[in-house]
Image 1 (cartoon, one colour):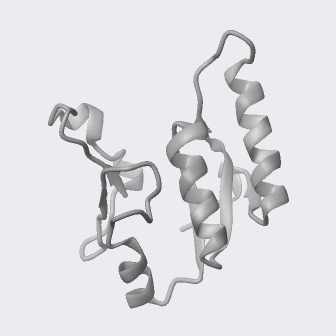
Image 2 (image 1 turned 180 degrees about the horizontal axis):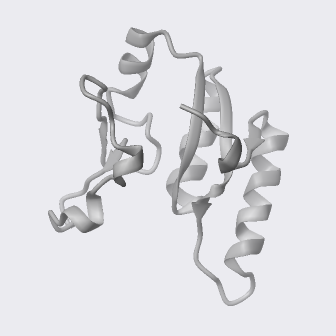
Image 3 (image 1 turned 90 degrees about the vertical axis):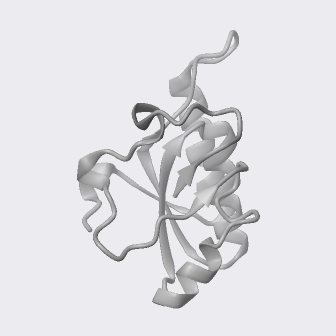
Length: 123
């Protein structure tokens, strides 16, 4: 999944994928323009094509893109696993990034997602 928008510079440092997470040859890369990875993308079609039942979710903007994607995945019936220490938020005047992340991790778990530490993720 890669977020792209019209106002975003086409800079590999901003839109690139870390080499350790880069897709393997033949793996699909789905472009998204909105918060949820499911909204107006080919993600669901790509997941059906490979028979995916479980999704691991991580990323930036905990309160935005990650939240929207996690909630859509749960609602679509996927076994949704949030990599609890692999999503990020910014500090806000009334709450730290750490508190925001903890809040959303708890909310996602209540909604039906599972939490997993990055050190336990294998692929």
